[in-house]
Length: 452
Image (tube, rainbow, N blue to C red; front, side, top):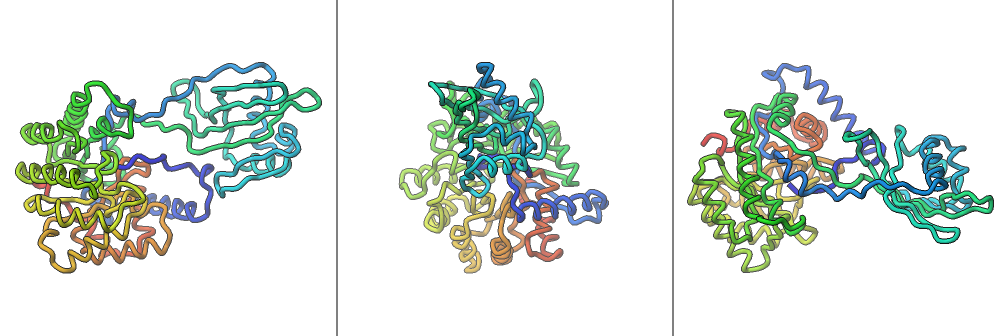
């Protein structure tokens, strides 16, 4: 799983193409919900799911700035801005004549009080609060930093952030000179339990799921460094296994860790000996694995060799950033896959990071499969998030590549979401130009590691 901003709401992304996809997905998902599971075209298994412990959720959540009180004059300005959230005339009075607002949707600057008021009055679907977190004034100018907030108490959610530049007008009142909103709000991650996952699977009529531990988060250089790192990695893997074991026959667990860490082989061996895991999840991106560095390749060969010896399948998220592509895929094919000839290797997100995928990397594997390269004998691809937010041309290429690698190698997967499994599968059916017969093959695929 690559951590990325949550899918925005309608009011945060109002492009016509996304609205069309969402509407099509909703209509199709609603129709599927009414079809008996035995007759609907529904995946047997979700091959890319995650649970998140309270400790992991706390690790990756953004540090929220505390709300503060501001002077009465500034509080009055913010209150008026809230009260007139959809009132163009009322908003007009709150801005200076030459006001500026940054429109993140386009992106572009909007200049002038009338145009800014018109935009803001139509920007939001419902009312909100403005929660100030910092301010400063000097003479007749200043700023206010704030969150856009809905809900109360523990249920309050900051769905956006904003910086107001303010100026004191000739009548002595503070007005907004410039406004730079940003969506979505600060990163929030809630714990996710097996009960919640099972509810999502039930809603989609999906019987089984592979749960990929997020223990590698604790060893990721992209998240805050933690004390007793390996202890926390072990704890997250064990928590995931305990949650999965509450639903035998429906959920299976794969452990995880940063493969570059000194404890990686020890944790791999511990997970294998415990008998609680069917495989391991390797996230090259979050672990900062670089397949163009010989020392990283040597380390990953050790990991693949050890997994093969212990009969642990591998799910590999290979995308590492904009530079990732065919060169890295060739290294993976030539140097890592030969170390794991006897186990399933599942490449996540169709050799990309999601949404979408990286076609230059996928092409390396597709060509090898077409040439009957023996290194690809146990190679599979999950399609978690691949169809999300894609153009028609990209979706057509995606469908063509599915046919090229072979339908039997393609595994349905969702990722942590949103969207949830039912909406994700509905989006694939509604947007990817595959026939029902082709989709039926994908839906019926179950990776061999489920059957161990």
